Length: 283
Image (cartoon, rainbow, N blue to C red; front, side, top):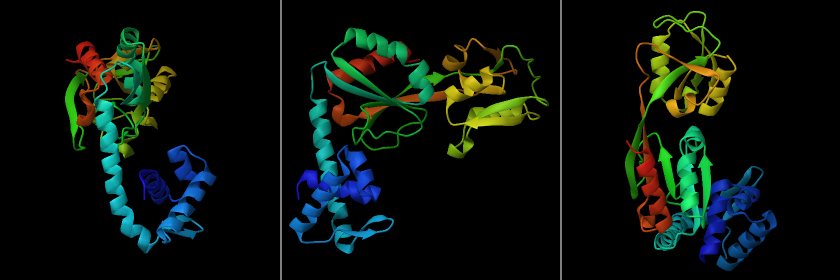
């Protein structure tokens, strides 16, 4: 069983359908079906049970799953090591970050980097999903929490200040009150957000009018007059329709962490970007 066969096997095992496996591997549904059938014929084993709900591992398939995952780890480690040995400032650099950080903090860094290294193509992946550095979904990532994965080189980059904002045409609430005012907050089902808890404590009489997992959406809703919002200062301060509200103290800041896999630490394009990000952003 070669690595290309293992990739097909793992994609079907993880996604449960041929179509989803094809999208994951960026190959067609018929190709996945044909190669999976060839793999089962070559091994003489039925690796998946075909059901109405999708493909389920058989006992034989489950028996080889762990070995296939070990083979994947070895192949990915080889890819990372080869990528990390590249000394030329060319190729693709994939950057992962929260949506607001990619939209409001990173652009000056990326603009200067692109001007200095025009042969490096930048891909920016934003959102709440944590892209895997080990699987090379991203080369460098920015997060609001330290990295828990193994083999990650990381550093605290910034202590990001937050502010309270409201539509510039609206009245400002008094600290400790908030009755008659509405809030725009983060969707706390995704986890704890100290700034949201702080805002509710400062304005106990206010009601939550809107929740979103996207800081850019929160900013635009507050600009539209929907309610009071807590935003990272680089986001809120650049909204012309918002004004900052003084509630007696600033919201709790958040740390921004930058990390990359140790296997790619020798990559020239990665090192150049990391050095530039530190010089322009670190505090």
